[in-house]
Length: 278
Ligand code: NAD
Image (cartoon, rainbow, N blue to C red; front, side):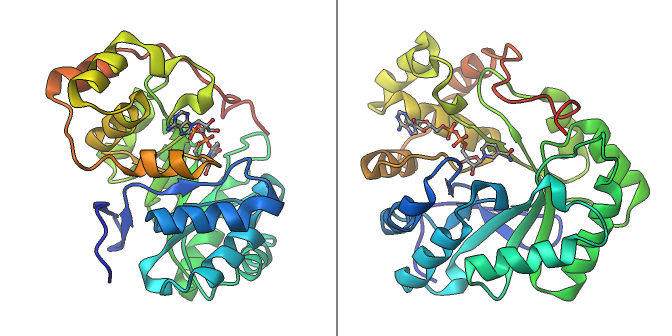
């Protein structure tokens, strides 16, 4: 494997994941190949997409065009809500693999619990079977709160490797992250920069750390996530920002700087509540 500055985090199933990746939510399908190729050229090797983003084909074309050996890449996609249920999962999985042009997937996630459907437990059992089939290496969930995770732990055989949740300095989900840590579930932070909906880059705590280290506020927020142990994949269509967001391995925040950013928590959710989104 070629050298990468990105550390890998060990998962509870024996696999590992690059801690920093590139996400493609809201990346226009027509532009996805170019944007993902840019990200791969910058150095990203971990890509996060989803059926509902409508851009799995573009991600697949970029992977094929890049010529990067498959084993150097870590590819995640997600099962959309209307594909939940024992009968639907295998075909939905195959369609995603086809669109991506891949023989196997590194990580497959249930995108939302959608509790009103009450199908996430049977969906998880179908995920367990998929993993036994060998064409997906790791399985996990997204937007699961502690009580959704608890049901899986209590009622099924495999503990999720990952929970991908909204997580940024204004919304850190301490109950869910504590449950995850207790059960060996790695937390992925989606919306790690708050999707640009909060003035995170203007907060004095962030600006002070940026000035102290000669880095940008975005780099400080990314560094905060890395030092808190989160996996993250900030999104940008712009190559210079992709490079900026990747250039975060030459400095370390001290404990006081990390704590000052952690203290910014204010339950500032940008998305729907997982108990209400169905
Ligand atoms: P994000 O927090 O990564 O914010 C992205 C926005 O931040 C960009 O549109 C850009 O405007 C801005 N930005 C990026 N880099 C910047 C920089 N260096 N300086 C200034 N501004 C910058 O939000 P996101 O894209 O929603 O989250 C990242 C990824 O998480 C997504 O692409 C997707 O893969 C995943 N995600 C998952 C879910 C889920 O339900 N599981 C939901 C949303 C996103």
